[in-house]
Image (cartoon, rainbow, N blue to C red; front, side, top):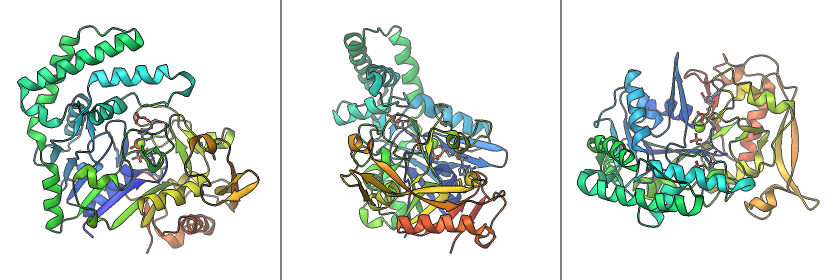
Length: 432
Ligand code: GDP
Ligand code: IMO
Ligand code: MG
């Protein structure tokens, strides 16, 4: 199948960027289909650590074309900075290598202000958004008043639409939050200049991706966020504002569903979450500190985009099975197995205890209110001693680590095809 879909099976930060980097070696085109610069995808290549927010992780491979699909919301300011940073680090970025969908929506500084003010106003029930303006940009899209990439192509009318949008949000900020936006003229000018500089990248990316697929080229769809942050399938309202699951690929890129074949679910060997919302297997003891790390290593559990410490816990098998079903996952790539080295006991949640009864599947669907009361039922597995970061062959993994991987595949009901034992390109074990 020429299309491979990569999605996160948890609450984001599963290591999608790291796996997309590996799979990109075999792909001709790599596309993001949802979200915006709320994503932070880390790719480690030797001494270089790339943190990608909007551009697909495939850009690191010189032979690939990168697409920002119509399902995305794009911030011209941060995208320009991302292009500059990549260029400074020796990655060639040009309109031949990077295409922005004419139908993608734009995030403005006003969306960011609104996002931050709205989340702050939620008080104790705040979502803990990344503050990047994602929600307000998708609200404008759904309300059919959004700015789209194609608007940039007519600079005079773009400035008019932008000015109307800025005035509109300014009024909202005054009315609802009592805060004024001053100096909006320079905001408009700076933003318009950045946006207009992206004009050469804008094209009909749907036609481009369909053309690649029709010629049998290998297309990789890079998911952002994770299944449990999906607007419909996630832990609403503690979700992002886009379709993060595999279904989003088709509307977010403009391709037919018959292209679906391989769906790779990226699963971290334990559970993490940034921001608020239910987390049945969350740990708050010293085990949490061990799983999270101190922040000294680049892979420690602190947000790539916001730097916030991530909440951590044992792997949730109930939610993993749910993610496999929702996305039609055909195989898993397991990441960060190395972090579990040295634990004498490793736990996996295999069921929830609800009203005195154990359920292996969500008893009432993914309902945020109810989930807060679910008790995780754990299975305990033996851990292993010693570092596994240099292991490259399955048979060289400690038997307890093999057992853990086997058990995850059994619970998920799909095979694990890749096991990542470190952030570096070569720190991976392929399974038959
Ligand atoms: P993404 O948003 O799903 O792309 O994931 P992030 O990049 O936000 O977070 C994953 C972090 O774990 C990054 O710092 C990666 O470099 C790192 N990482 C990925 N796989 C592994 C692994 O197998 N072991 C270790 N130690 N770190 C990993
Ligand atoms: P990647 O692609 C982890 C979370 C935020 C918040 C919620 C809504 O790196 O896995 P938003 O700013 O999208 O309105 O925030 O979603 N969130 C992520 N958490 N990884 C991400 O992306 C995330 N993108 C958004 O923390 O809880
Ligand atoms: Mg991330």
